[in-house]
Image 1 (tube, rainbow, N blue to C red):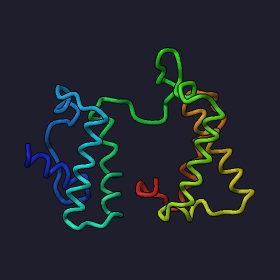
Image 2 (spheres, rainbow, N blue to C red; image 1 turned 90 degrees about the horizontal axis):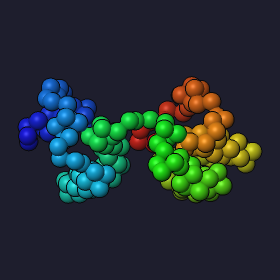
Image 3 (cartoon, rainbow, N blue to C red; image 1 turned 180 degrees about the vertical axis):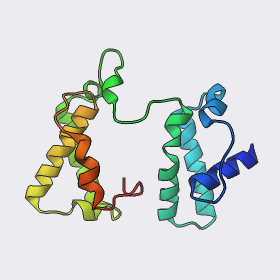
Image 4 (cartoon, one colour; image 1 turned 120 degrees about the vertical axis):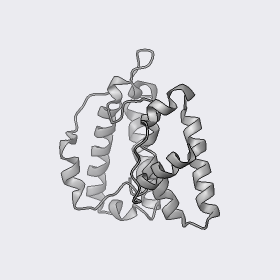
Length: 170
C-alpha cells in the first residue's frame, strides 16, 4: 500500500513515476470515504509538508492538485451540473436561498479575491468592468446551481486563456 501511494503521489505531483495500480475509486469503495475523511487527509498532508519546511504557496498547490481526487474516491460526478443535484425536490439554488443569496455570495467572493494576493491582479479593474464581471459571475452560478441558464459558459476558456489562470489561482 505504502509503495503504491508513493508512486501515485509522485505521478500526481509531476514526478517521473507512473502509477499502474488499481483504480482509486475501486480501492476505496468498501472504505466509504467521506468529505470529512478527505479533508482530514488533506490537513494531514498539509501538516506533513509544513513540518518539512515547504512554503505555504507550494502546500496550497499540492492541495489544489489533489482536490480533484475527492470526487473520484467518492464515485461522484464531476463538473458544474448542479441542476442534476436535486435533494428533496430542491436544486442547490433553492437550498441556498435563491438568486439574491447568489448575489451576496458573489459580493463576498469578489471582496475576498481583492484581498487575496494570489488572484487580486485579475479583479482590480475599473468600476464598470467590476459590475460586468459580477453580473456574469452571478449568471454563471445561478445556472450552475440549478436556476435558469442565462450565461453561455462555452467561451469561458477562450476569455480566460490570456490571463494564464492556473489551478493554483482557481
